[in-house]
Image 1 (spheres, one colour):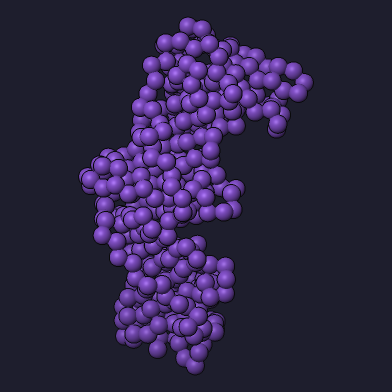
Image 2 (tube, rainbow, N blue to C red):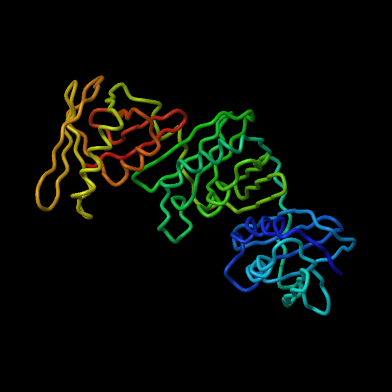
Length: 351
C-alpha cells in the first residue's frame, strides 16, 4: 500500500490538524485515510476534533494511524514529493535516495468520535467572523483553568443577529453582525478553538451551532467542538444601546497621556480618574510616590463630574478604536460604553 504526496500539500494539512492533537497518549495520534486520490487526516483532543482533506496520487484504499507531531517532523525533512509506503507495521517516507521510517500504531489507538448531526446551518462571511474573534479575544479571561464561561468566546445567535463577545468579569467586548437566519442559540466556545478559527482567512465558511456542539465547515476542513458549560448572559439584557451623556477625545491626545502613565505606573495602582468640564478633561493617576495629572481637550454632551476606571484595560480598548474615543455613560451608573462601527466595548466603573 502506498501513495505519493507533495510536501507542501501535506505540510499545509498538518499545520491545520496538529493544534487539535491532545496531550494523552491516544490523542497524540492522527488518522490518515487514503481513498485513491483523496487523503483525509483526522485528529482530536478531549473537546474538539478536526478533519482535513487533500489530494494525493494513489490507487489504494486504506487507513493508517501514526503519532502526529513525529509524522510532521518526518514530512518536513523532505523537499518536494514524498513516496509513502505502508508495509509490515512500518510507514516509510522516501524521496530520491532519502528514506525515513515511522512505526504504525494500531487503529484501536485512534478511537474515532461518533459523527455529529446539527440541524441549524448558517452561512456567514468568514472575514467578519475572524475579525469579531480577534476584536474580543483579548478580553477573555485566559488565566482561569476551569471550563468557566469567562474562558471562552460567546456566540449569541439572536433573531437575525450574531453577537460575538468575551468578558473577564470587569470588561465586555461585543461585535454585532447581521445574519439571514431567524435563529436563537446561545453558546460559548473554548478560547483555543476561537484562536484556531481566527487563523483562517479565505475559505468558504458554514457554521452549525447548537446548545451542546458546534461545527465549522471550510472548503476542505471540518471542525467539531463541544461548547463550554454555564450560561453566558444575553447581551441585550445587560448592555445598553447607548447613553445620553457622552464625552469624546482625540485618540492621539489620550494615547500620549497613556504613554506617560506607562513610564511611571505601579503594578498595584490601576485606577485612573477623569474629571470633566465642557471642553477639558483632567486625567489623574496616583502612584506610590505621587500623583500624575494632565489635561486634554474633550467634547462633553450631557453631564458628568468624575469617572474612575481601571487603567489596565483602557490601552487595549484604544487598539480597537479609530481617531476618536467616546465614553458613553449614565451619571452615577456602573458601566462605560465604547463604540466603534459594529464593535461595542463595556468597562465597569471602579467604585
